[in-house]
Length: 287
Picture (cartoon, rainbow, N blue to C red):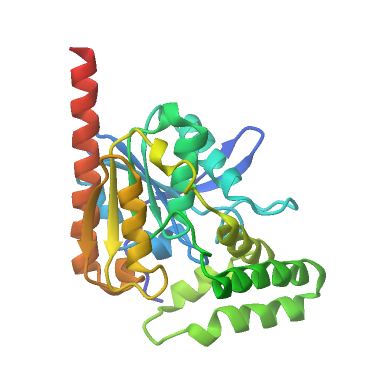
């Protein structure tokens, strides 16, 4: 079976939280750290396999699966984006990382925003990709996300056959021939009850009331042909963050996988912008 060249992975036990499966690349000595936060229904590997090694030329790279996704934490508690943000900060502590740059793609964007909101002292800067300050603005979007919450309850209560049916309906009908077998195996690891709850949590998320308070260097990578997160909503996110820089990619929501030659250089540029601006701020304060 063909698989991409993935970084080494290992299990990391975080006290009072659980065991995380972590991908890590050391990067150059003294390099800033990026924490990669993936999108809804993906995994860290599915979302970022095209980016790992390029980012590692300039950064220490850390990636893990969010709750319920892939190898992510399992819990009987309802899925909450805020718990994912706390997981991120706790894992960084366990890995000896004081400050880092959360890089959030799609659903990972709200998680990254919440890392800043809940742990501002840990955040060196933000890179937000193909994402927004809210996801359910119109009535039909709100109804769609609320429906996912109901399906999550069904997934919690029904037997394995019904859970398998939900998996078929929500993923397999959208499959294309471009998915390698390893990708299907990644998705087969999901806890679909938690993944569905994540969709409901995403639909309820909004940072519109506090996004203007973000005070760290930020770059927003806008996928200008996005059919999932409207580009105007992505631009509104960037406009709401003081001093945020915009990096445009003429591609759809899956650009990181479907058009890596366009997306990866844009992501690299965004990360380097944020790291440079953060370093300049640190030097000015020290001086």
